[in-house]
Image 1: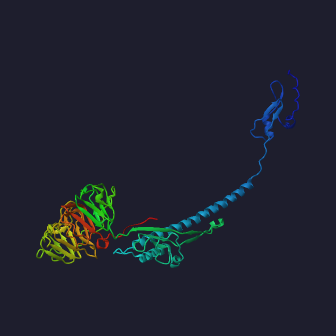
Image 2: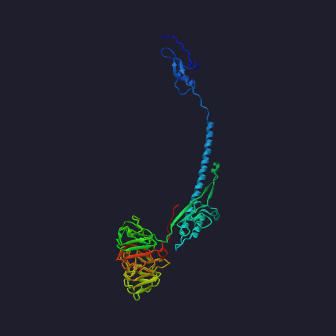
Image 3: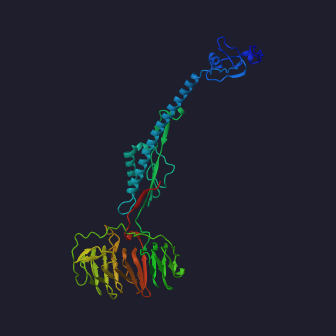
Length: 491
């Protein structure tokens, strides 16, 4: 295009027909003399912001026109109102659930306390079950901890109650009427009204909790012959050890020879191994059994010696309860008045002929150590006083039936390593527990003509001579009884 010539006309197109320059748009002279619309000015005039216009040709501008969005402020207000309602309901549900959870916690605490209270009085000091007292204790604790009334108990139901329900309410129940080991307590149901959950159709929560306590009722020992020495082999040689009415247990291992016998109508359990022909064990021993602890560990020792004085024998016989040194009773018939006899040193020697007799009812012999004649506890491994009834004499003492020494006939200091010597012929009149936790029971071979009525707990058992035997019958009521123990919640 030459100087001074007019620009060629713009051909109208579909887009150009709809775009017009405002009358005030500035025109500038481009290099070469052509007129050109000021794009920025046109954009400002059309109300566009920061949009870059595209030129389709000289004198033609493409303008992007935006549409205004519809006003949504009303919809946001409705949504906010709905969310507010939901949040209020959620907060109300949290409050209702919190109140229900708090009530449930109170109910569970009351159930736990009531079950433990019942278990704590389930047995009296003599080992007799006291289920009526247990029910009363459970209800007292429920009233104190959860405000449960008699009317609440009368309407209480428990689909999971135990076998024995001693009163009209099944919500305090026991697994046995004669020797219970478990008690279950179910709290009467408590309704908790709701404030906000009712808007969702839940007008109340029903709270019902329960607890079960278990207890070892005591009263009997797990083994009638308990040999406690671990890490050793108890060699019975050709001796016979026969127990009626209870189990036999050996910590460590046991060995018997071809003519030996270990027999019971209960179980034989052994921590280690059992050597010898299995035909010599009745029933077969269960080996690898866990070691047992001292079954008389709760027995308070030394016994109460207040009121006892040091005494001397009269004609080689103890004249009555008191504190003694060794006495030679061979060939004597000595009858002991009831009470506690403490032997601090030496030997009570009965190892004579069949004329020798030591007898008495309600008697406990306690053999310990001494300092300057005064009884004291033995140090571990110390040799204390000893009882030797290894001859053909008769040891016919019967333990007390009441008091702290009930069921205890012969007791060695727990640390005394002394030997207790008995014979299979001399125990016909003997009744009560023999306890020598750190001592050895030596059975001598004069035959098997009599039976001890005793539980026997010793560190070691040896058999000397042939034949030598130990035969004992265990009746819990004639022996020391462990108190109920191990009370705990198991549900």
